[in-house]
Length: 203
Ligand code: DC
Image 1: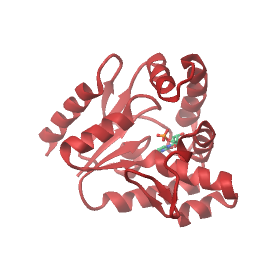
Image 2: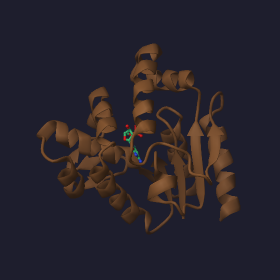
Image 3: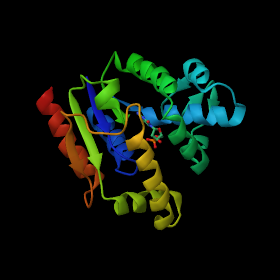
Image 4: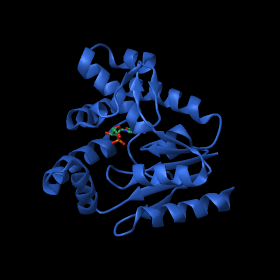
């Protein structure tokens, strides 16, 4: 079974998906880490984006490895975030990573998080959630993680949001059958509790 959690950056997807996976005893799939890992690899070594996306061996878990190298921290830098956002507009890269994601999701129980899980990767997901929060709250959460000024984060976030929503291939949008949840002013535990309830109802 798959629970799909999509939404913009800073909506709380990662925290919610991680906690939910732990609560259900399911596996967590961070699809964004895959885009980040390919982007980082291209920044470091150059080469063809589509070839790298096909060839790269990514292991997701407590640590993230790409072709055997631990990239857990390196994929979270501002530079890697920016490169991943640009790379995510490349259709051949998306096709290669979607194929890898589908392969993983084919067996077992998953909480999968991203931008296109409910619309493209797993359109048959048992539960689809589109998680949002106000732009200011999203920027504040990110700024707290990064230790920077939230107004600077807000500027950067607005640009990445626009790119995610406006891109030609798999733009960020809620699946028609997704439940939209606004996490503004709510704790992650509260949101997780609500989704876990939906999963129990669906199961
Ligand atoms: O969720 P994240 O910030 O780690 O994602 C990194 C980038 O990859 C982000 O710009 C959006 C993109 N992405 C995507 O296009 N589709 C996904 N399923 C996951 C991430």
